[in-house]
Image (cartoon, rainbow, N blue to C red; front, side, top):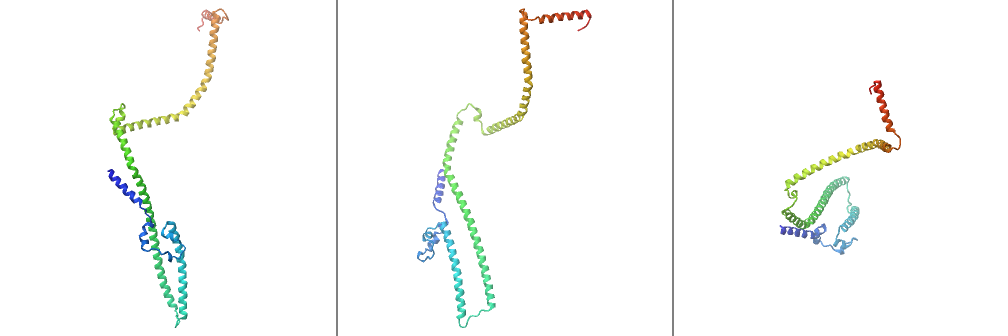
Length: 280
């Protein structure tokens, strides 16, 4: 298996080492028609033709289009002049009838229509070639990316195998935690149960968070109600302490005899009620 991977990577590396381009693919055709630098009348450098690049090819194409347009105009001008002169100086002079011009114009229209159709076909072929070139470029980039990923796969596989061996060794070692040695189905069930508990706790937490503002307002209200009670309690405690102090001072014979007077008044009240027959 490893040998097979190595063979595939070696084949891909060999393919990537070869430069794939239109220029390289056109070398067999260019070799069949070697350029003659002495016959080149254009101002395009010979180095750009011998060592072409996309930019130089684009420059050559624009230059030759301009030259062809000028040559075509010059050719039509010279041929027209030549035919006109021959028609004048010929013996007998060439006389063209109107019907002949009409027939020639009809032939010219047919030729132009045929040329236009051929131009349309060529334009379609160029568009198809451009689309195919873009698709091939995309596929080449995809293959290059996948090749890089495949080159890294052996290392990753070795790392995963080492990790797997370590996990197997750990699984063979007895563990004090039973949940760590569960099989996959039981582990998945345990995970689902824990997830359900977590969802329940999250729902409870959201409920408590929603109730927190209301509880906070209620606590503030109770605190506001408690403050007067605490003040009243403090006053009552102070009064009780003062009464206890007075009582203790009364027991020691110091201070007023308020408690004695109270008992005397109570006794007098009970005596009067018994005498008058008034029920309390």
